[in-house]
Length: 452
Length: 150
Image 1 (cartoon, each protein chain N blue to C red):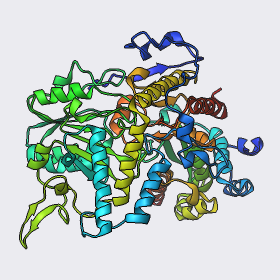
Image 2: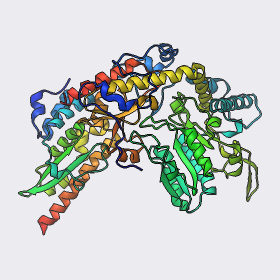
Image 3: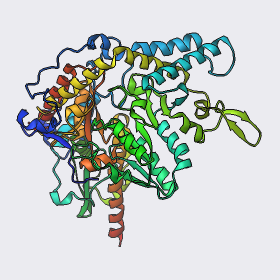
Image 4: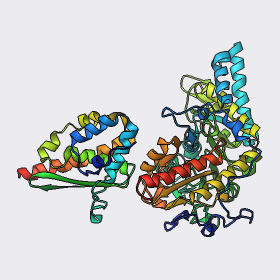
């Protein structure tokens, strides 16, 4: 890994300098010429209508300010359809799932299985049995590490990953490596925080048995070429695990196009509830690997001294699942699909471009990671002389929600050489005006901190 | 609103002055603004004192802290890159600086924090950062007390 990499996109030292922004658009097809910070053109996405569906965006904060929510990378807000679907479940047909053959039991089972089918369609998985409900992204990754990993990783094997990873897609592999004697290797990154596709073989060697890769960095917004990486992993006989937690709200996911073996995401960053997520696994892998947690539902027959396992997905779903949350997840998936991926992705790209363009106006601000056209609509940055902690307070006071700290990516921050960054992460309900609010607040913060 | 400039300008406030100001401001948002003002006026550490030895870990922001002894009393200096944290350092200075090691060890720091409402308003991350600084001061005070006794 290249420790000299600064991973900086732009280093604005004074006013906006479009001529110096060429590093941001090195691969631009020539369409996005640098220009004045004009708001993006109207998109097919009716953002005002979308905002009206989010109750939290329509009411004042306790301090009377209007919420400018730029923290969707931490968790996304929930539209009424999701809240209504959960409420309807609890109010009209709630009971335990897969258990009794009662009227309610049939209704709730039907709803949970309908959500599973929604998730299959959402990921373009081949079969609904490849969709496992988990407690979230972290649980899904630990499940793969503790089942497929323990059954297949041996001493001397290589587990390949990147320093872009969230701790959830790093620590389980560290634990597995320690337990098995395997070696963790990191795919080298380019200076702007992308996976260096010319050097993947440095980690993807013949000894590599598993590649764990994010589809979207939660700090840099980097969108690795997941298909190429899964192909490269397969070429050396390694299984691929994709952390799509940050990716799913920004771009269309297609597990069959990617050819990944496992993929995880959580509902709560996709406008759904917390406490539930999906682990996609290829059926033949799910059949071959041992279960993780033992308990009810995951067995076909229990004897006093041993048990036989149920077929996937039940094999990996011990105990009562988060029923209302699964129903909410299905509603969230359908809601996102109904917006249309073309419109949603176009909106995301426009927001990313506008965010990076306007951040350049803040003196002393450094954005980390790749150019706008290589990232999802999020940016982590530092401002010379202004600690992330102070910025967070000054932004929060104005009703602007961002996140500051290491964002569960300490190794990446070590590489960046900063203890903390401030992250603005945008969602489907964000507008150019939210970015304008952020810029105004950052300029005001610099004055408050006597930097201007 | 923010604190009156002449109050904030004094780099070393007493605990009573801090309590008075906090009471006057009443709400946490304004108290935080006040901490920023106080923090920005906090005397800086010399560059050579900002090193790995003096670094206090466990804080969200960078913090360096030194404890010396002069005339049998603690001489504490500290600095953070975050102004809010510098404001909290001012609270620690008001509590511990220029005390004898003995007196510093006898301070009920929880009582000090709660008298300012800090226990209620600080996030757990900030509390753990603050307690890291308190531990450093207490550790040095304990070491100096032993040295004095010898």
